[in-house]
Length: 369
Image 1 (cartoon, rainbow, N blue to C red):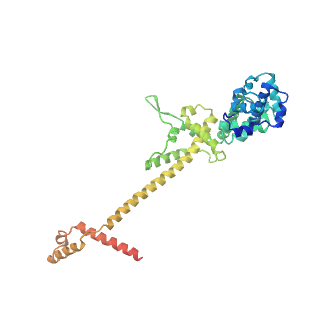
Image 2: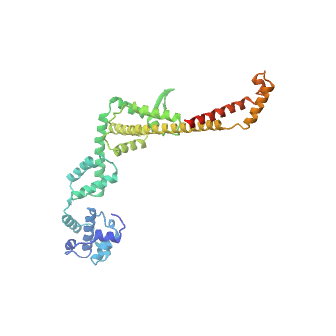
Image 3: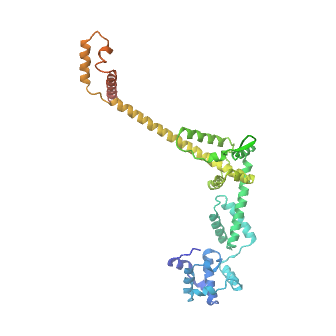
């Protein structure tokens, strides 16, 4: 139960109603206050507090004021003994609850496996679902430690069933390939085994900066994953949260730890990792290719812009250049062009003039179109 309560919340959840006050008629003092606190606590939480300290002081004070009693009386309430047991029985009967039995906890474990654990393994969610299920069945939950053990048992049972199902779908060749990913021993050198990085750890690495080399590395990873021979529908009907749960566990463990798991768990962990990693690498390859194409486009635009700028550069003093070319040609009409013209106007300048003329001509043609 939370520790802080607003006045509005206290009125809503801890106000004693007439039929509840009727239960207090034969009680007095500390027993009267203790019973009232247990009653309202159970009404809200569908369980009894594990200790006196679990009940927040604002709740104790609010209920005590309604009974014209001092909050200190709650300290005198006996937390063990026949009086407490009798009060609990009376409260359970008032709300229509009963104590949970071994059969009830076994049924709850089975229910968690069939209805909750097929979607999520989060412990807080499982605990909330367990308490809610017990409330719906009007069963007083066992102790907190017992609930935790029940949840762990359910998780273990669900995991064994799930991993056995995954293992049954994997071919012998796929099992060999998955084990090969975890190998860290290389070829013998001078009769001593050499350590090598496992392919599993290589598959964990990020693509790095955008480049052709990174694209090729990601492509090699994808090829490695596809060569494992995993069935296409291996996790097709499994909720993404469950697949991610096993993938996250596999990512957090080094190969030597993964090799220590029993076969069903080991193969499920590695297969889930490879299944999701294949999808991620495919996405990263697409992203890398898009970035490379974008970069090529930018570079191409820059080259075109440079060429256009060069095309539009004007050659200054073209009329004066024409005069000098004409004058030199008239003075030496019989001589070669390179001997008459190039000394007056360089070949490079003439090329620039021709290029400018063609650029202008091309623009005029486009406008006419």
